Image 1 (cartoon, rainbow, N blue to C red):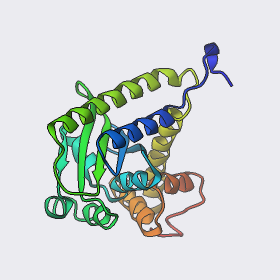
Image 2: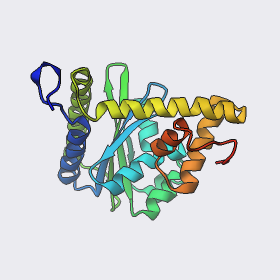
Image 3: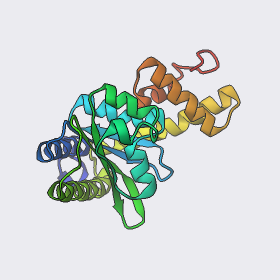
Length: 226
């Protein structure tokens, strides 16, 4: 069905997934993922070149640590050519998890326009070693391409763009879920998010799915502790 104004709807998330696939091939990576984040660094939306990488990408929001989180917070690239030696202390939960999944190097690049931060792109490799100068250039170019797509997608959202509205909805669900868990348990918002993350990790579920269950009242933390 056409969007208002006669234009066909645009699958922004699908396009971003395709860009991640292009980046993975160009950079000889095992996978490339990206995360769109709120201004306070909380989860917004993740997508990736493949499902396995998407799960690795999203684990950062379950654990509250990782290259994407750091790149977003610092507005600078995070380059880790050897996860085993360079990341275990930095990300004591996330680094062992991705190492067990076969990741040996990871490189994160912030998605940013001036002072406005949108998220980060992560490049994962199954071998150790730095990115070459040429590969770094390609990675920055992909990050710029993603920023342009996100901004274009935001403009199209009011005209019926598919995917980006769902991403925004996921973010809203998580904020609402935090508030509900805060009331259920009588804890702070920060503690509520920690409980939700812990539940997602313990049950091996995506954070967005847990948040959706809380909002729909299928999951009650005062009855089913995380």
